[in-house]
Length: 432
Ligand SMILES: [Zn+2]
Image 1 (cartoon, rainbow, N blue to C red):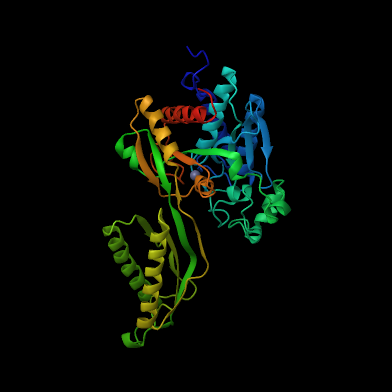
Image 2: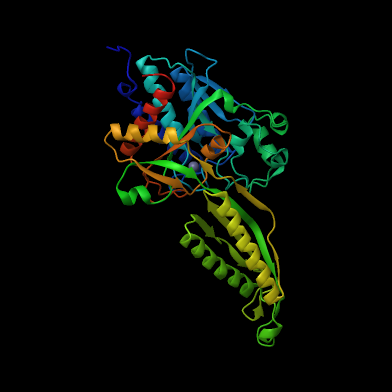
C-alpha cells in the first residue's frame, strides 16, 4: 500500500482564507471608510496594502517571497527539484473603483490556503509551487490590458510606461516607481517568467456572469477567455445647425449618423449569432458635447465607445469589418466624419484540454456537477495561455456579478473550489 499522503487528504486552510478576506475588507475600510465598496487601486494604496498582507502571510507560513520589476508578488513552496518547471496559481489583487472583495483576490487567497494546508501537513512537492499575486489587471485605472502579467514576461511595450492613470493623471512610470518597481528593466523587456520554466498556470476566479447562480451549481470549468477589440475615444463630427431652420436634406447630424451605425451593428451581431458566432458588442458611452449641444441645435459632435468581445479572433475581425462598413455608409449618407481613434484590445485564449479534464475529474470525485463555460471577461490566465503555457481557470459561483460592492461569493463554494484547485495542483506537483 502506498503510505504517502494523498493530495485529497490535505485540506486547504479555509479558516486562513476567511481571515484574509476579512482583513482585506478591514484594510479597505481603513483607507476609504465603510460602505463605499472595495477600492484596491492599481499601483496605489489599496493594491499595495493587499500585496503587503499576502507577503506577510506567506512569510509566516515560511514560503519564499519574491517580487519582479513590476512588483508582481511570487509566494513559493520549494519543491524537491528546484530546476523542474513550476506549478503556478494566482490572480490579481487590484479591484475596480468601488468594486467587490472577491474579484481577483479569491484566486490569490485560494492559492495561499492550498499551500498553508501543505505546509501544515509537512509535505514537499516534487517541483516548486508558486502563488502569483498579479499587479494591474483591472484596466479601469490604466487603459492597458494585463500590465502586470505582460511585464512579468517582458512583454509590456515601453511606451505603456507613459500612460496616465485615469484618476491621478500620473504616469504608470511614476506609480511604479512609488511602489518600488524597476521601470528600466520593464522598458528593456526583461522577463521574470519564461514559458519553458512553467508547468502550468491555474486561476480560480469568481464568475462575473449569472450562469452558475442560475444553474444552482457552485463551480464551473472555463473553456476559453474572450479577447476584446475596443475604441475608447471614437467620435462623429457633423455640423451644428438651427433645429428649426435647417431642412433634413441640409443636415449633417452626428446623432442620427451614430444611431444608424448602432442599429446596423445590432443586425450584424444578430446575423453573426444566427450563423453560430459567439461575441458581444457594446456601445457603453455616447455623449454630445455638453458645452455646445442644445435642444434647438442639430448635433455637430458625438463621442462614443465600442467594446467587442469574443473567444474567436475571426469573430472580432468580422465585427470590426462590419463597424467600418457601417461607418463608411453613414458618412456617405449624412456628410459626417467618423474618427474611431486608437484601437486597443487583447487576444482571446483557449484553456488547456487536459487541465480542464483534470478540474472536471476533481469535481466529479467530490460529487459536484462539472459544467464548462466560457469567460466573457478578460483574465491574466489568457496571457499565460498565449505564451504556450498549459492554463486553466475555475469559476466559483457569485451572485450580483462583479465590479460592484454587491459581489457575493459563498465561502462554502470557495472552499469547494479551493479543494478542487488543491487536487489538480497536487497532481501536477507530484503529491499523490
Ligand atoms: Zn478579475
